[in-house]
Length: 339
Image (cartoon, rainbow, N blue to C red; front, top):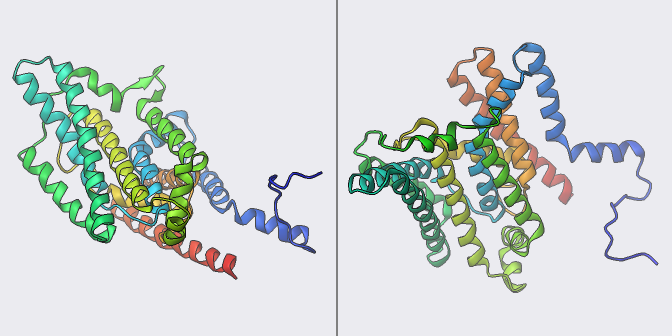
């Protein structure tokens, strides 16, 4: 007897092998494009496939990648957060400011820095809670809320730091952002891997993860199914802010200072990775693995242009074109599935 709960790939009657092959390739378009891109870049630059360069790509995408994984939750739930770039700067400023103030009052610089990291994470979690409450209690669009918070947090970080970098941090702090494991693997990449695993497990294998998809797909149906839609939206807003705080801590550790304008524009990179990875801005679809591929795709593109001496401003043009192209492809595929 067959188990009715066993999932069997659906194959339409009379479907040819070629058709099934095309359907299979459509499910792995990004992987194919990324592989093709890697081959092309490796042919244009002899330095691309070196171990040092590949690890450099991983290091460069680590911090924005951590934010992107949190952003995946937000976008799947049908929301958006444009304030994460400013949160990065504020997070680093909080760590550096508290470290300086407490150490000047007699606390050891190590304990002061640990306190700063703790306050930074808690503060950013509360910011996410605030955003979520505005969204759920007052029905304000998350786009408007976080657009306002983008400027508010940027200004707050500038005021707290008096517009200057705060540099009084212990030497061991630099390990988080600039250190390596076994003198090979960048520590930020380890944080990226850890956040990737945690978020992938949560979104795919937990009840909360299923609730996120249901909330983004059809909030009213999710509510009627017993899901606390408001709670889900609040939690995802907290998640992305905490991820941004972690990225801010790593960035401030890398340069050993808290600077208010760190992270500016990172929200677009994070959103780009999520959208290129196949998530829909209308909510209800997306994968952490897809976001990871989108992140690597952007990292390879940026690295390739740098190796070939392409102007920084041109890279903005390419990134914008990629976002438009990814949304267009996503829209076409959605129409085909509905058709």
